[in-house]
Image: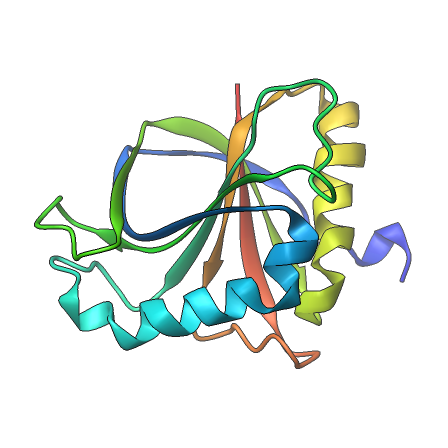
Length: 164
């Protein structure tokens, strides 16, 4: 694939929102070696316990330490697998509620296997951020909706990288 195949990244502003779900600390390798999938299944099995769910889309939020030497392959960071809620209700046992403030984001749709997601992240955090002069905040998130088919080439995942 060459750069021309990339869909256009665009900047949007999202209002504040709330999520409820599981929070874990892990590096990328650990998360991808099965930890992420098992948390996803637990969340899916318990989704009816979450009050005021806005929709059926699962959100994977990733919060990074603001440390210049941070390397997501080797260093632990926070993963929150969650659903968006219209308002904060009672949070189920073992889960957390998390509030996200209004922010600008660059949004970009990854197409293809989930295992190739790093290519899209490299594009947004590397090339796009460099070329546009934007600066990322300390988190991003993915939305897994009805287009989420991790093992399929038809897979599409919307990425949102928070901008300063």
